[in-house]
Image (tube, one colour):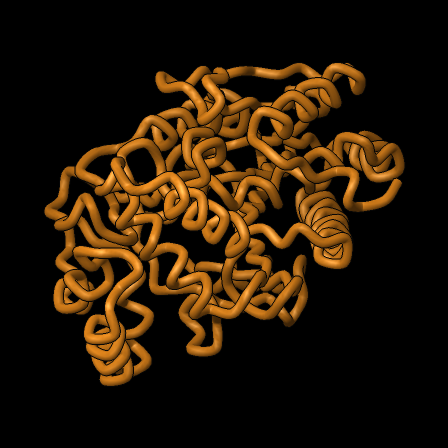
Amino acid sequence: MNPAAHFSQTYREARNRFLEAATRRGVAVETHIHPYRGAEGEELASDVALIGDPGWSRAIIASSGTHGVEGFCGSGCQLALLQDDVLLGQLERRKVAVILIHAVNPFGFSHLHRTNEDNVDLNRNFRDFSQPAPVNAVYERLHPLLVPAAWPPDPKNEAALAAAQAALDANERRSLTGGQSAHPDGLFYAGQEPAWSNKTVRQVLRRHAAGRRAVAWIDLHTGLGPYGHGEKIFAALDPQITARAKRWWGEDLILSSDPDSVSPRTLGYITRSAYEECPDAAVTTMTLEYGTVPQTQVHDALRADAWLRSHPSAPPSLRADIKRAIRDAFYCDTDAWKGMILGQFRATMIQTMNGIAGDFGS
């Protein structure tokens, strides 16, 4: 099948196709209904497809749409996997289960936001809320410039923001996007409590992953790095897990702490929850981050969308332009890009299957 055929144009289409593919495959689906409705008035949900025997000791999680609009890419990967007879046959023979979490953030997926219904960046929300929120001093300085009073921003704002960003050193640039808790209308907002998606993901982990001997997790993202390239990003927790991750995924695995990584210095990222909810399992997680368009374009799209959320009465033409920009920043609707995405995802799934089966027996 043409790789482009696995990708959808709306959340509604993506969800329907995912559910239909799971039904054809005879795979059980667990649905978690979101309290809000979608952009077309449709039901929103995180749907979990459970492939393989619940009693198998090893499982691979592949999740899409943690960052809403990035779900177009991840959903395409999940749909392709559900239709991949050869790879699913190999997984069955090796007794490796697969847990597909479709649309972690269905609200953002449908409404074309990177954030959720409360403007929360879910990859900053998985933190310990019993502790005081860390202060992001770098973001504090730049917030008024990042989310201006008017859109498009005037030349004075653009010049001031460019100067402020140019003055940041490498560590400050990575800290800027790592998360902040002081500005609900801003970028990279971590929230004040666990979001609906946070609670839902933890429920899925406790129910379907915590009892396994070994769990691998690939969280699919877009928007950082060169066009079509999937950077394999790993958050190092200890030398043993790092060595295992490199053995599975190769020397091109990038530590998130590496200065050359496209990943920001993120607090509260989603995959850390697996270590908390599956304490008896050997957990190995990775973010697969696909590049789209130049970072200036991604950056401007995020700023525009943050402004739009605070200006619901914006002219329809401006709203449409901003929505198109945010979609284009995180989803390249071309056959070439989609082919690159699926090829790398399939290769990563094979690496993960070989690694978890080889290291943790049957």
